[in-house]
Length: 209
Image (tube, rainbow, N blue to C red; front, side, top):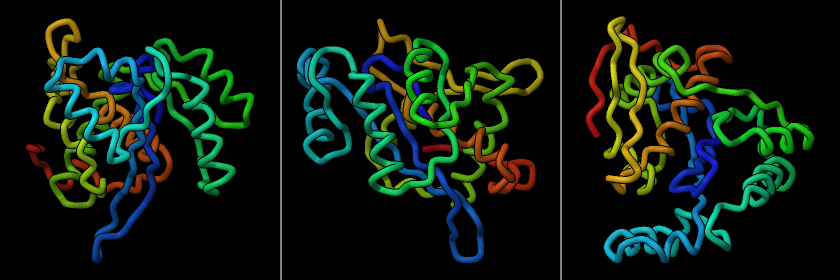
């Protein structure tokens, strides 16, 4: 899934597929995060230290300049498909500021799926991701950037009980949730392709990370 093309504390790509936990069927995914070297330097010292540690350990991939190189994101997907031989069924994307990249990837032979960010699209997969985490059927490898983003996330509920993640105010907070939103987007497509995930209605629960 591709989420928020800008600076990646903000671009998350998720490899997402079925896995097994004993007798329980679940899902596993691996996040890929990109950020810029200039963006890293511009952060406050305490926050920059955290990002530098993640980058040094390979949890964030850095690109040159002060905006994420969209071409680098495109190349990474092509490498995963052609060199790593990963079968990429489709690429879901947030349409905000992503039209050109979606067109480029479509030209490369990827199936592009627009995923809008409202209640109608994100409510069910948000609940399913919460349920899978509670049931222990979600494997994410303990990725520290993703864990941090999970801690940053809150959800908003409408009068009909639909939920969606709420983005922090970027002018007032250093919190980011883009990787979690990308995971929710990936979950939405997993549900479309055969319902690999146990229904959230079979086992209700509140996700606390």
